[in-house]
Image 1 (tube, one colour):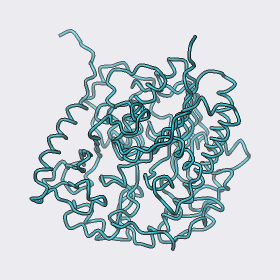
Image 2: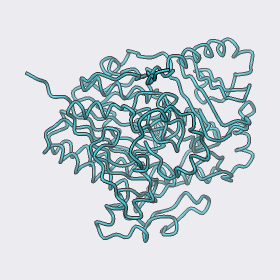
Image 3: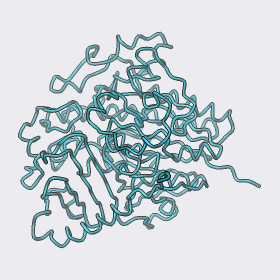
Image 4: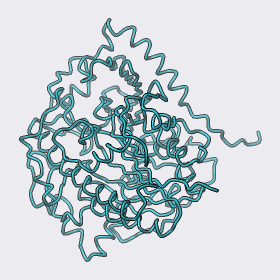
Length: 520
């Protein structure tokens, strides 16, 4: 007698802090459906990313490998088409594998020409290997969908079908645009700030979209996921559904009633908002010196005023509540189709957002907990509800899913299965989480492109910067990370111990993949 493998529903949001959900301790935001999911699953209170940027960490979740190993080190470099993923393993084992929404395993809006200006690929080992089909890395380019060029997809890193929601807020393209057109809607007349019904004039990234709630990208992902659940039931194979929302990543563009669902005046400021940054790295000092002005691109970190932050938070909370309502519809669809008792549900995000912590917001070259920590719930049917303080990483999800499915991993995986913690909340599978960040440009005034390496342990958080002799060290009891003891006498012993641990973590996560050999 054979035992049927479990189904998987993997729910993921974009740029979503660990504490911007009710079950994360937030008393203001309304996320009743996610809270109910958390109440029947295992909540990982200390889940950290492998990299706090979209593409690198999403590729890590798919491969179970660090960015320095899978080589999607920063946004703009697509994951190697030949990379092994846990989804490929699932499909090989007979799973029906479907992606819906934001993938960002490939570049969405940075052209190949621009990447070649920024990165020298002439020494890349791929030059020695068979080339992929031309255009392999342009499946998520938002421009092609708006031009009516919709590719046929039957394999996307192991997904046998993929429907994309490319970009963010109400500016989403991809198959979502096709979905709108099938409903007789001209996206040009409702999307973007030029069509906004209302706006906050303090920051261009905050406005009420003209897209109705029933046509907003978050609703599209809800509808498409429900349809896929019904199709998967009819198929009969075990399934893996990856439902990925582009929100609550900025721009913050909630539709309809979600625009005024939260009052900006009622949004509480983080306790570290007024951090003077006396012992901080130079880029933080530069940001707070120009508070209220976003001096770089629309995605780089900056220092908002209290009013700007409160308006952003109110709009972001509206987007999250809309996602939550769609999560509720999806979970109800599992119940109605008789699949809830056979389906493991996972909820997480690709990375966080500073959102006012230490007086700054967004991401890039910021390894405070606001960017590094993400919500993580794994709800396995029949398991008791529990919370754990055990360290966990995004890199661990691939091996966890494969073990839950009863499928072997593959060479080069670098994570740890979290199944022992699902079985026993007092268990631990790692004593540290290793985090990387590499950028194309100098964001920290180091004189070289930004490179950061971080270690999080039960003792604290250590971050080293290439090109800087100064760094960051915060003890575990400094929960708001307000006292940087990196260069202080009191931190000397801890810094020495954690630096040694960091070196060992870097060795442990070095790529050991064999390469082709050629005759000399």
